[in-house]
Length: 300
Image (cartoon, rainbow, N blue to C red; front, side):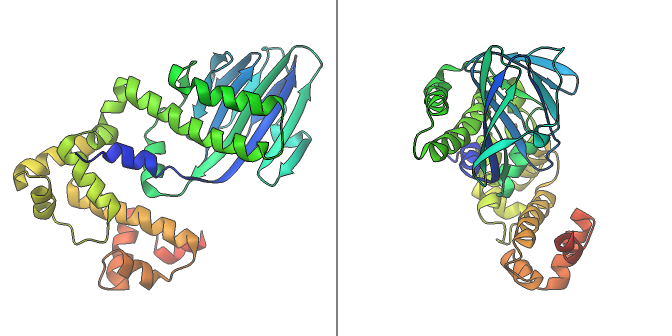
């Protein structure tokens, strides 16, 4: 059986990441900036913390993990009376270009956090992030305990190679948090996520994601999933929210956007690599789905 959801998780390789180990003493507060196209994560390894996203406050205890999948700006603080300066205005000690240590606060009780903002390159991973809840919070999950304990140990005593260990553990923890939500929240069984977990439609989605350049048709996808054309077309639209061939085209444009940003290929090469016989046909499809031409998308 095809595990389309598992494949989407497998493709969640992070890039353009920034990680920060924070040592905070009460009273303290921080404002995280809006980071478009990023996912914010916070892991509390000791102490206590309040996080406010869009006016909603969540209290974290050691071992808790909170994600802000859309990268919206938000506040962290020890108490409502604490000032919350923008974190980018505070002095950091940079261990590497992508890893820093922040010490901040007024000398009271100590809180340790590992925070970060990460991006995802693969279209399947990006799409998965977009359908996650506004805030994703996991409280002391048993299956994540070993990862959090290792991260806390490294954060307490940063040894040679500790930066590499913490950043890799953070990547693992983000995926574990998403997986925990997928397994336990009924909302994860609806829409595109629900379609990924459907035996037949999930198989079709996996085929499209693996090889968007194939000359897919409704008939071919139906045959691959052992369904009749009419039954497949109706079920795909019901679960995914749009007809199969529109999804194929839109998925190709997700892939195209990624390749345009890389700047390693010409528009003509991208068109051929996605199964289009001409650059003109690809450009028409791209503008219809994205709203601008490939050249404008690359320039922007």
